[in-house]
Length: 174
Image (cartoon, rainbow, N blue to C red; front, side, top):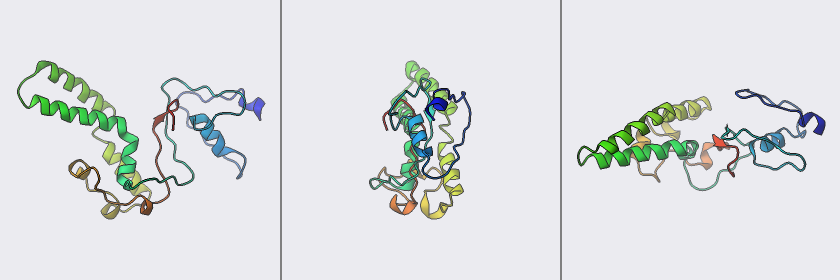
């Protein structure tokens, strides 16, 4: 297998599937590719800035976060940008500040381009697609923005066994 793996390449933008019987190392290979494990020999090279989405096979639910809050963790950078937009809005409420308005415009354009106005809808579609009940397992549209940070709809243990990990950069620690 090492001779095959030494020449293996995944082209940019490729979608791959690993198929094989239990116990042959499919999960280990995925964990090596995304950087959750180190190879016992050789090396794994990843493109700088690579972003990988990964849903672990086993449950890894820790803490008391709700299902909704756990799903929001995949959008942490986008949510930080959203919080910065809100802070700039508060600063601009005092009057016109040309530098703040320019910064706000740049930040808002990036926020929109990166899906900032769509991420909650994406979460809802994924949860509905997985069979979670909209009425009981996650808040109505835009409710997450109005509720306290520690409030939520579904408790993580009751929400199922999957915990979203990605998207994350492959060179970041887990």
